[in-house]
Every structure is written in C-alpha cells, then in structure tokens.
Image 1 (cartoon, rainbow, N blue to C red):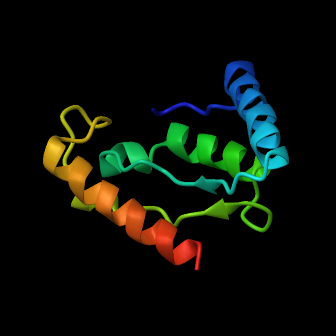
Image 2 (tube, rainbow, N blue to C red):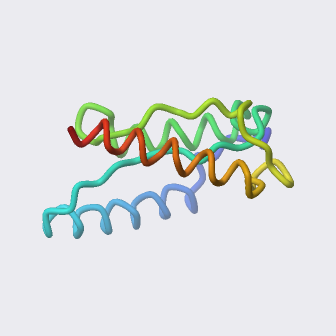
Length: 104
C-alpha cells in the first residue's frame, strides 16, 4: 500500500469497469459509486490515493454520482480490509441512508 497504482493492470480493470458502466447506463440504470471503509492507514495510503485518483479521472464527480467517503475510523476490520459483522451492519445502514438521500 506504499506504492502507486498507475500500472497497466489497474488501468485495465478501470477500463473494463467503464465498459460495464456504459452498458448499465444504456439500460437506464442509476449508478452510485462509493468506497468501502478500510483501516484508516490503508485508506490514506499511497496505493489507495493513487487508485482513487484513477477512478475519479475515469468517473469524475461532475458526471457520476459518488457518495461521500465514509469515516474509516468508525469501522472495525479483521485485517484492515474486511469489515467485522457489526461494522458491516453499520456501513450497510449508512449506505442505504446515503443512497436514499442521493436519489431524492
């Protein structure tokens, strides 16, 4: 997590994602982007920041709906990436609330 992600595999994954997004948009799906919470050290790592930069470049906030980033410190993980069950429930409720607000 201390290296940049601007390598070809990350770009390829994002371009594949872009094709899927386009397909869904042509079928009138409303897409909402969001980040899963992770340990704060990982969330602020060089790798996470560079991947976020790639995603925002391909899916800019002025053209795509992004939920605000969750407060990573509020969630507990088993290994820095995977949320523990109580945090899964809290995050799920948070996402539902934010989606409802976004779609009003």
